[in-house]
Length: 225
Ligand SMILES: N[C@@H](CCC(=O)N[C@@H](CS)C(=O)NCC(=O)O)C(=O)O
Image (cartoon, rainbow, N blue to C red):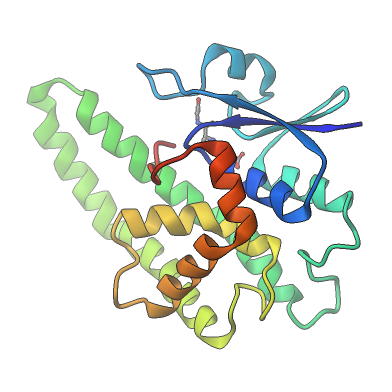
């Protein structure tokens, strides 16, 4: 059965495209534009996605959403490729940590920030000041410290080895990529994080990343949730 990636422009599903290119997988690609007004997935996408979100992978009758479930499903089909350190491997714990931090901690913080930003833009003008004050407090007490903790740990770990889970690229790097790019755009990764910047350059030089970029048509990194 051929895998089909239903790819939403400017979205986390770029990582699945990168993974498929990295594996040299045989797959079909369907690219969907975001709704121009809401910037959400269009109706046609919501109709196929079990949760209404991107990415979605289909394999015959199977329809799968959730980025990391899709990554594991695809990697199960390529057991010979070394993008996922096995149980007992020295890099296994780092792999599990970053693979799960990406979707369990990092992306939710970025989504929270994006949602708050869009609420601020949508509320009536007389509420804007209040919403801005509330957001600034949530940001200072919760969001920024948690984001900084993730970036500081990334900076430390990437100073110990070339990639998130040792000296070879793994699926942990692929799933961390969207959040790291968004963190750089949002100013959480700065010149004070040379190891994170080096890692970002590494991913941007990866041949499979470049060919995924061509297929995606993405010109820049915009985090819209
Ligand atoms: N935890 C989910 C998050 C999915 C998600 O929020 N995707 C965004 C794209 S970055 C989306 O579908 N946004 C459009 C929409 O909600 O309509 C996953 O990893 O698949």
